View (cartoon, rainbow, N blue to C red):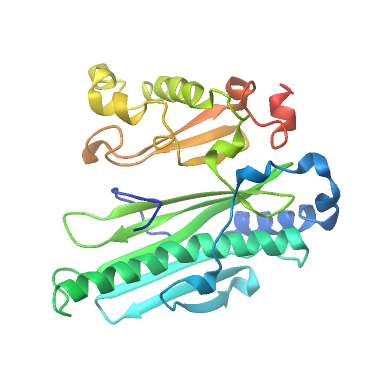
Length: 290
């Protein structure tokens, strides 16, 4: 199953590389350089990394084409009118070890859910005697932007999946990598070991959600078990994190804090609120309160 899928409705992302994303790629090329590998202060703890599987390890062969003058790659799998799978991800220019690892991390992160969807489709076909039943399936994964900070590189990935039923679902892929190594970082790695980051995120997220509709108009929803359980300080509830210029963005998918009809939600918790729990090796200025 796809790790980052939550039931939701989402606009299908296009494969074109925006001007903002193109500029970010050039910025990344200028900042992800060999000297970053020689700066021990930029290193994240070894336990922080989530090692990606090679793209070639995917059990389903996806077709691959380089697009946008080498700045992006499109993976696709087309089975007539019954299944349409596409994943578009950025390619950072340069051949330094950190850049190469970052590109491998990005490629694996985008290829895995696409290949998993095809495998899921094949499994359903096998159960149904090889016959496709119902509406065509679709999967589209892209990215909205790239952000390079002093110690991190992030890709804001997301898209849409439909496997039959009343409505489709959103694909959430917030991808965070250590700039020094290019390795993917788990959400917990963004914070100090043993820090109470979940409690702080939960408190500020609940406060921010209370200012959004429908919670602002119907405050009783804030005390509902659905909301309380979906915003409780657990790793499962706060697994979709993305560092941004202003703070840590938290995503709450459809059905996480209420019925499908109310939508999914994004809140940003300011770095100032997190300064005591941020990992200083990754957020040196923010952790110092600068």
